[in-house]
Image (cartoon, rainbow, N blue to C red; front, side, top):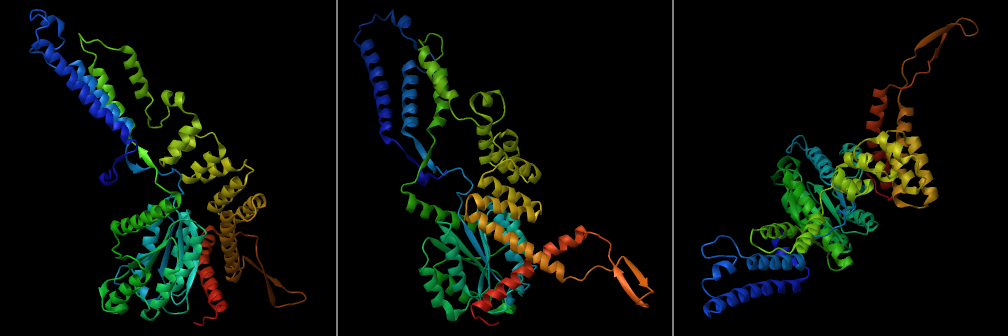
Length: 510
């Protein structure tokens, strides 16, 4: 609970608290005056008073005043937590830029600086499940590896392919990285964050970094140093002075990679805070989650306390209080009570929003959401079965994503084409289709470039070309191990070729 954000949505209802106190004081004063004035015979008082001298427990007026005060506070709407939409996309977009300079191969951070940075990318994707994370690689030039995506497996595939030999040009092109990230995040229309995982900076290009950072709107930059502290270079540690200059030029906080949970907390908190600031600037005043309904429980206990022998109870008021208590939101769970108040799809959506995807998959009847839950739960065959009957662009899109997870790349491309036929130019489908197409093309080129397996059978022709041997191959499919090896190597070869082509097109020589 953030006490600094505690406030009341309808503060005028708090006037009910002094009204309840005034009512209680007036009643007690009136009773005291009646006894003091002698209007009631002393012999009759023990039979007329509910709270006899020496009795225990509160009087009816005490309970009534407490009920009025608590109800006034509940009606005032206490709130301290923002009412954020429950959709998974409402998480700050993040782009991680990994420095691929040769100094990142230093072993001062085990197993190496680059491997530590790649592990941080994987941990961030796991921590930010459902959020979009992109990837940039840079050294002397900057290149987009993957646009922001919530597919952490695809992100991990390309992260593992990063190595210090992918970019031929040397240097630390932080200014170019900021420009690339700004261009990508402009399409997200949200407050995005660029994280630089680096061990150095080009001090001669700080003016360009500052200019690039100042030209960007609604994007913040974070700089995280990878390596042990020391005086300049891979052998002696990171150059702290250069990194401080980089952070100052980019207007960015500077952190140090420790490999612990604090690194992820530092990154996610900065990213989410900036995201909320940008969203508030565009959306106006924030919406708050009202917590007054929790006071229904003390109200029910106070009403129950009124059920004492000798007290007069307004049963219609108790019935109304009971209805209010039963109407309070309950956790979604399968059962007679949930079935009485919520449809299966509503129960499934509540389970989906709290991350219980297997329960959501079992409760949903809507095929789209049933497929979404199965997809998030990793049940890709079940997801494909749910998505297949759908003929919408979203249905074909998730069929393609599921086929990609099942490594059926040709089927995935066909499904992306169907989605784009229904919704031409749809950016998520265009981006994912391009990734799968390039991956499939890279795999095909590598397979063609590999040497063939030894011939299964050799036949000697003793007729027209005597003495020459002719090799014939049996129709045998590549082994699963060979296919997986090609899949693992393909992203690295694809990225190396892509980066070289971009550098050549920009006129940058290695």
